[in-house]
Image 1 (cartoon, rainbow, N blue to C red):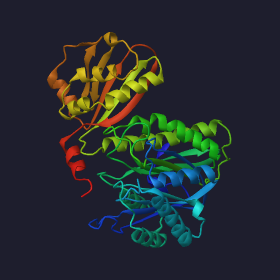
Image 2 (cartoon, helix red, strand yellow; image 1 turned 180 degrees about the vertical axis):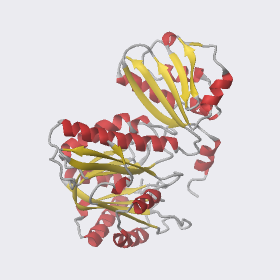
Image 3 (cartoon, helix red, strand yellow; image 1 turned 90 degrees about the horizontal axis):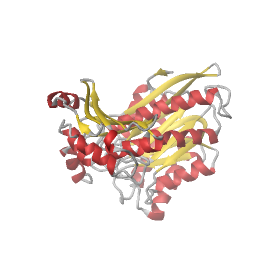
Image 4 (cartoon, rainbow, N blue to C red; image 1 turned 30 degrees about the horizontal axis):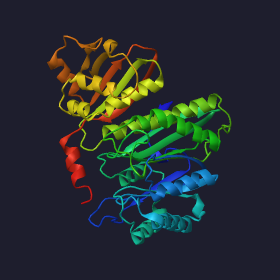
Length: 408
């Protein structure tokens, strides 16, 4: 497997475009993007677990589950089109119709996504105008891929793209994607939009199985603030243009494709966690030697979502009691009297707890390790062989500032 550039247009046959239509009147940056495949794609999707689901989530769920293929995705920022009732769903229908007219495809092959303020109505005159502009701007260039990744950002500070290349049945296959997400991020679908494209030829059911399984240990293992959004969406489009022997069973080619999709999704997950609103570092939590993966996942997520622990990470404070506390209220059964805890970063590794008690560690060394841009906490529960990793970020004063005036 090889890391490559190109993001969502790394795979053969995909193009993207972006533009500014000032969905928020004061906005001057790109706020709409389009992804287009030269041929129809089999699709897979995973969506928010929030009971309050935005109209685009309902639209995309129908397209993914009721139709064999899709060919285009239209995304806007600024307005989430959530809590907008039947009118909001009609907006999705109007977007699909406008896209079908300019691209010459069926409305039922158009996926839509929105992110931004909940409860506000989409300015459909601006949305339709943007849709009409973008077909002439479609390109498979890396520059346009980056522009599209920029266009889907809200409070993100950097565009998020990952792509890899593998070989399946003697053919070069690529998997790439882009995502956005910085706030309202919590496990069981992180609050985000994520679009992944591949030129692999793969059965639709197997594509969905792979996506649904990988989400459990990637996007469902990140958290910024404990809020699960109304618009969370992960879409995968596979157009088959690589020409590999079609994957119709869980064979060696399926395993290679699964691994490539995992690498892309894990990479995007970590980019979201590290760019949490106001964050100064990526906070990684590993639980090792657990009885089961389920136990390890529960414990690691409890630590990474603890506001007290996140605040300690911001303060570069080795306050390990908060980690044990978060493990204790997770409801996963473990023996706190045998747990070891470590902190690790590019500055080194230090054992701060052994068998549930503090070691004679250096506070200065711990502070140095905790001052890095990526900080890892490792909890060894000594009960088995399973492990899990969760990703989050520190909790800063800027998080409150950003969210205090989000609508303005």
